Image 1 (spheres, rainbow, N blue to C red):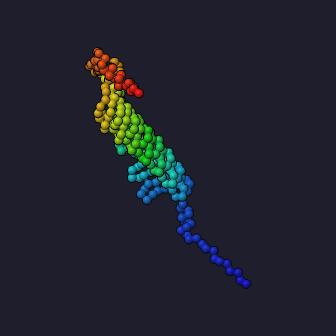
Image 2 (tube, helix red, strand yellow):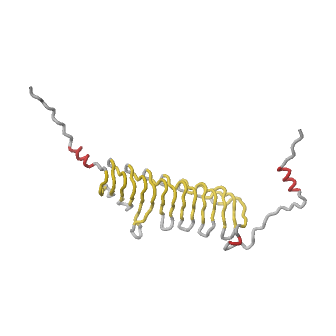
Image 3 (tube, rainbow, N blue to C red):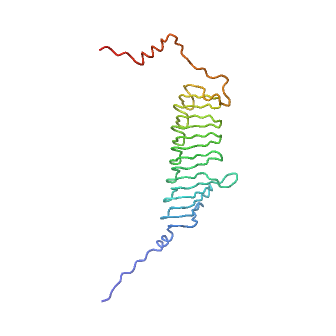
Amino acid sequence: MPVTKCPRKSEPLWKGWDWKAQKNGLRHQVYAVNGDHYVGEWKDNLKHGKGTQVWKKSGAIYEGDWKFGKRDGYGTLSRPDPETGKYRRVYSGWWKGDKKSGYGIQFFGSKDYYEGEWCGNQRSGWGRMYYPDGNIYEGQWQNDKPEGEGMLRLKNGNRYEGSWERGMKNGHGRFFHLDRGQLFEGFWVDDVAKCGTMIDFGRDEAPKPTQFPIPKVEVQDPDGVLREAIAALMSPEEEDT
């Protein structure tokens, strides 16, 4: 009795070609249609591991960690300087889901930069900002602006310590006028001091002290009437039972 064999099924050619085209492990330069190119590790056709990405349009370069096609982990982003053409570092730090998240340093210019915590590409948490005019802010951030408790130190040495909201002085705070030897302590609303007290503070060491010191305010009470009234309010007599 003749023996019949089922014909062996052959896979279509495109499946073999697709398998060979799968990117896994370390690959040399791989170009995208728009001219961007990447050198590094892959997993299931996604950038995964260590790698370097170059964007043709902007010229930006990212070197660092990747996770399933997105920047994730530690990495450095650099861009070419428009004047010199040389690459300068823009950001060095931690990423998550293709966004700056965690601790990192952002360079905005040659003199202004931020070092601290990030969340979703925004300064959030604790951080220190160096401004191009020489001022320095150190404290809490939220939504890319100073929010919470922080200190702003001006170039001339004067400083503000207190509460911030939406990037402005809001709430209780103290402003040290070290150049003239005075201290203001009070309440602020949108960078404007609304009420408070001003006293002399280190006036003898100040480089530009005021012409006259702030006089002390004293209440005249020769007969002791005011003191007796205050004492009565502080310790009222007990009612007879």
